[in-house]
Length: 304
Image (tube, rainbow, N blue to C red):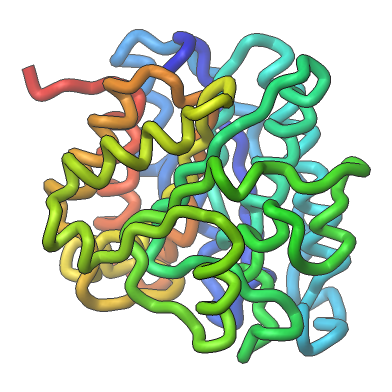
């Protein structure tokens, strides 16, 4: 990481998915002693608490092709402002989700901060899913399947043009890693929009070290650094059972740690978020403890 000051921002949003429970993710990570363990590594940690989030029970779902869109946009704007404020103070934002729709807020905040300095960010998106649906292609209308499309300029205007500009990141500086579940109509955009996509097959065939090396080169090319967006469903459910949308065949425990360790060794990570931890379907907070371990590896914890 580029500094020794970390700002934790909780984003307990679960309106982007039909399955409830990821709103408790930030609490689960804190219960797993995230703050204390970061401090033990020598970081100065500020915890801003959670941004205000509406509850699904108190809000109408709205259009079925992008459910809870106004509420999600409002929450993402609050996340973005909190991220921008942290970066202006010289702190590294660590955002705790919540479902993956929060990434629109996180990356928008980073992009706005860097835009004022004529800079830009790369995005390393580690996930079982590409999250590149739009309201026109999504089979569910769940916004947590749309954030990356929004960030490269495709999707609902409320998210695409947050803070008055788009795209938030150039597709050429976006890498997807660990992909193994893509919707049929989504696949076309993934193939032709310019992002780099490493599926689990490529990790199987080429190994995590080679794939991560190429990924880091891509997200850093012409940027001021990269944002690491980690969806815990990238890890196989055998190791991470408590996630919003589990998919078999994911990264092993060691593959996930190697990816984080290489991100730390690179030294150019400017922000991180961890999403889709769902304590409701977890086993004794096991997935949150794994998430904390992976965060520690990503910020520089070493075996020796």
